[in-house]
Length: 165
Image (tube, rainbow, N blue to C red; front, side, top):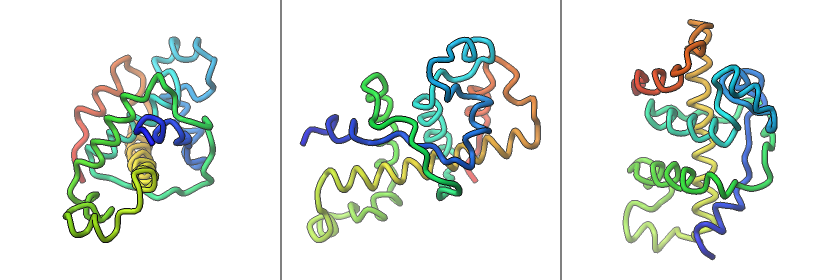
């Protein structure tokens, strides 16, 4: 099966515990574009998810799901497939992840590898945990300063200033 075909089958989820908070910096309502332009938020949860994954990777923070896994889309968007591949490859570039997935050595791969699809589904779960880690970091920062998202470039500044834990 082709890589894109597998990745496009991945559902887009959000942890229900963070859903209300995420609406502060991300338009999760879909077609409400006026909300996006008036509040300088990310235009959809695909963008929010990808931002949170990359932030979670930068600060090296993975969090298991706290609330219910809530579907936001039944499959990955073709419009964001290249960005999603970047997130997936960023996850796979980490030695600790390769070790976790038993992909660190030729022997481990030959003894444990089931299929590309199974491996990519495991990577998707890891991406979800990094996304939750990124959202938790944003929540903690917002708790300290509720005006943190008030500037147009707030998310860029937050990302650039984020430090690994």
